[in-house]
Structures are given as C-alpha cells and as structure tokens.
Image 1: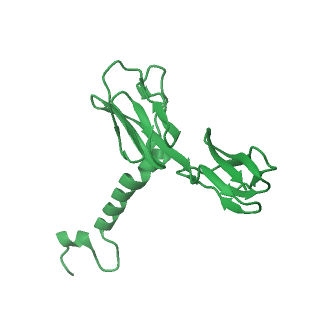
Image 2: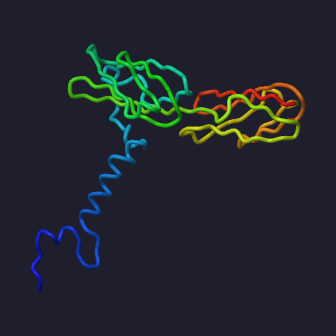
Image 3: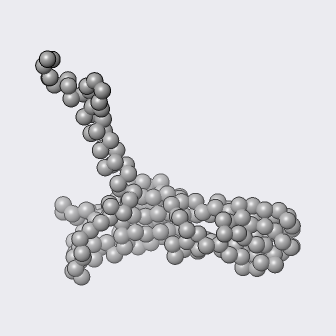
Length: 190
C-alpha cells in the first residue's frame, strides 16, 4: 500500500482534488452570492438598529438618490463596488451611470452596511419609424418584469415584449414600467 502524503490533497486517481472544491467555494462566495438575496439577509431589525434606509434600490441611468444611515450619529464613509455602474459621494448621494448592478457600502468603526443598486435604461430614447415598420425596445439592466404601453395606440402600438409598430403619422410615447420606475421612448411615425 502506498503512503499518503501532502500531495495527496491536490489530486488522486478517480476523484476530484480538494483544491477544486476550495476554488468552487471561493467563486460562489465572491462572485455569485453577493448578487443574490442571500447576501442581504439580516435578522429582524429593531426601530433603533443601525441600517441604511434602503437595502435594494433601482435607479434609471442619470438619476441621483440620497442614501443615509438610520440609528447612528457618527461619520460614515461610503464606497461603491463598481463605480462604472453607480458611484457614491462622501454625503451618500448615489449617481447612476450605466445599466448594471453594484453594492454601496457604508462603513463606520467595524460595521459595514450594504445597499444593492440596480441601474436600468432603455436601448432607445427616441425612435423614428415608417408606417407599418417595427422596432424592438429593450430595458437594459437587471430587470425581469416590464409592462409596456403606448400613450396613443392610433399612432404606434407596443406588444408585451416591447415590439413597437408604427400605425399612422404622428408622435407618441412608449412607456415601460418596471420596479416602480418609468422609462419613456418618444416615437415619431412618418
């Protein structure tokens, strides 16, 4: 029988090494879990507990939102995990730059408070169509349910999937509602 040594951990015949499992766990912990609701689970909050007043925030590209901490009277330092998507200044103002997801962290002493920020936008804000022509509008960013409607169905119609069709000459608005936000595309039919 062969003697098992230190190198036995890195691989063995007919099985998967322990290094594989460690790597898989690290990927789950650092890449996947922060983008799920498990990352935001908390115990029951009391009215005086330290927390951000919003834990999950949806913003439209270009929008600004003031984030503040409840339950403390100390200086807090804010930071963003992805400043290309949304950044935050020293006063807690969040600026949405482009579609995507980021985490805003508020730190004081050894406590870190988190808020997930999802930024959304339409693929077109202005659209010109000919009569009978179609174009598919899409919401860019991490959104699942979108409700589409046309302000004037006699000029342009929109399907449940965002397909816009020019009906007659004129200008109207196509409205996308998702996660409490309203996105508008101005449609001109020639």
